[in-house]
Length: 195
Image (cartoon, rainbow, N blue to C red; front, side, top):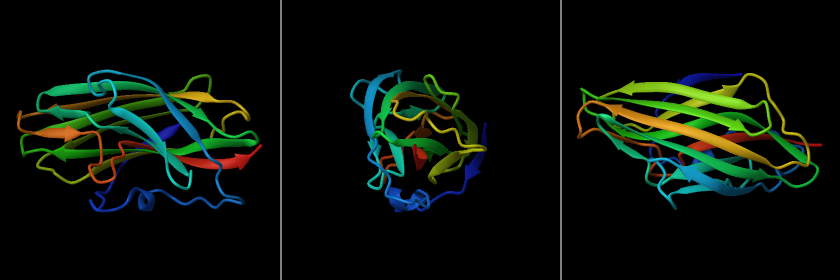
């Protein structure tokens, strides 16, 4: 349902809002409510995972403040987030963007695997991407929807995201599943419509 592609490196100082597409909307997007239900794994110790909507509610993001991997190691995190919207509205996820800050020497590489799905919904997304060093540029991956799957109206769903980040090579190399400037790790871009 989703196809994966590598995105070009983005200027480090860019703001999160400028990275998200602006969808043509008949009315302003409604307010989305997010609650982290649980986060489990070495990439997300207790209290290091957060979910926030953008100011215009056209997207929301997960942020991991401790998801950093050094050479010849990996970390994983599975997080569940309750996604609730006002009565009379529904949404579809148009794309999922992962943002990694690497610090790789010429003998090292990094690999990111992501799976995301809503409990009780046919929607899912995945990514499996790698980069080689030397590389210190912001690394983004984008999974775009081939067809939009809108959530049933007037229901809340739990979003599950499972990320695994690996670094192969020298112990001095590392990768962090977060854009250190915008503090966003995984971004879910949304399309809204009224029921």
